Image (cartoon, rainbow, N blue to C red; front, side, top):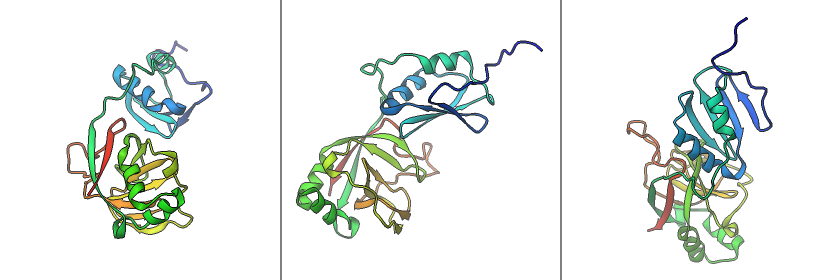
Amino acid sequence: MGKQTTGQPIVAPAGWRWVGERGLRIETGTITLVRYASLLSMNLPDVEDIIPADGSLLLILRRAARVSPEVRAALSAPLDIAQTAVKGKRHEIVVDYGGAAGPDLPALAKRAGMSAAAYIDCHAAREYTVAFLGFQPGFPYLQGLPPTLQAARRASPRQQVAAGSVAIGGPYTGIYPAGGPGGWHVIGRTDAVLFDPDRPAPALLMPGDRVRFVPT
């Protein structure tokens, strides 16, 4: 039997595991976007796609159950966190906070020990980073939410959350691209179209993009 030249089957190191025949999940902890940016910059020919998630990356490889030496080296390479960053776009998202658009705002503000106006100011004062997309096509998980605004998911999810709803779930704030069930606390709504399959780039926001919310 000849030597393999197309890569080596993985005896998975800690933090690596296969997801299907071509998916390789890598645990990345708090440096997911840094590792994501590093891998993107390498433009590795054996990697078809790189999908960031909460504390991990999913690499879609071009060959089943094989990891090339180049990919192995890239995943093991040390990172200069200060130098490596995703150079994403900056977006301003106009939001109608409270009222019918944000029914959970009064309760969250009371829980945080502040007025509704102060809560809105605090939420809109931050610049958030898109950590990853999930749940619905184009749904951004935005990191950077102040601890005082963080809240566990609702005990009972709503059967219907309106498209464009700006919401809070745990350490993240996010925006529902489409209407449907949802368990996050809804604090406002935007007219921005988060996902449109007819656009050249269907998702408005991508990992590494930066977001500022602008109250109406």
